Length: 254
Ligand code: SAH
Image (tube, rainbow, N blue to C red; front, side, top):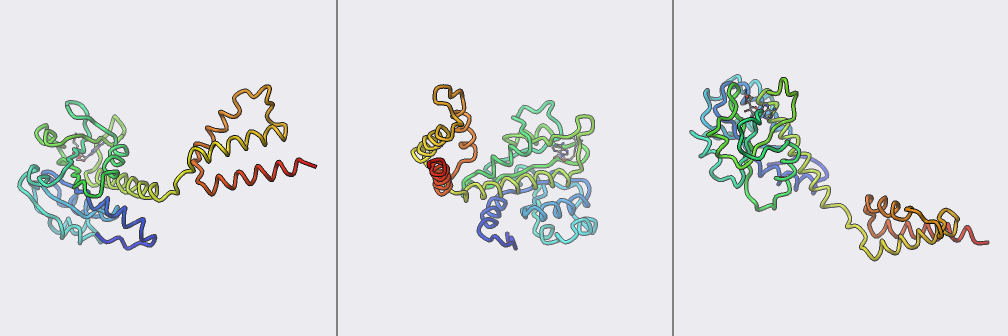
């Protein structure tokens, strides 16, 4: 898959994660939905589209709905059954509007996307399996899945259009993939000893300026530690903090 974007390194790695995802449409009724799915996929950087036993083959309605995503449409593959469509996938996730009667773990889209985006690069493919428009996934189809995803929707009207369900799963996958990449490029947080030095210096400085009464410290240092821990400063930031504390201490002294 090509990702014609700047920020080359980040998007390449996210693209690798998205390349591991396959969208499987089972027994789809409306050819227009196949095209709309291709479009939804392409906007999110997905390209592996597979049809399992479609009720009608893709036609000019699919092309119309695909808009500029005809490459995804042209690249799709068809199989006679769901089992064949997912045979080479290491994880098979059923995307279902219904929770009732499903004997699998049901996750929300965001949590699931985070799970598969954190897979090792060589972990293999994940299939996202979407059911037919009228009936959704049957129990036999769900039995081929290891887990299920439900999109949190209005409980009184929870059935999305098929391609819109693909769009949401695609978006969550993309965000998770980009987040994973951003996360791994973040500078390493300063080590424990460095941060202990920061906290001791902070405490000494706060005593110097009269903000912290050593005889009545209450929970101030514990709270400040929690605040700094949340920010996960790196080594350079830890040094900046120490420099600031020294400057405050120096300004206090005559
Ligand atoms: N009436 C069917 C809905 C089919 S909609 C049913 O009750 O299951 C077609 C497909 O879109 C579904 O099989 C599912 O893959 C997806 N979909 C639609 N709404 C969804 C939701 N709220 N959560 C998860 N998947 C959904």
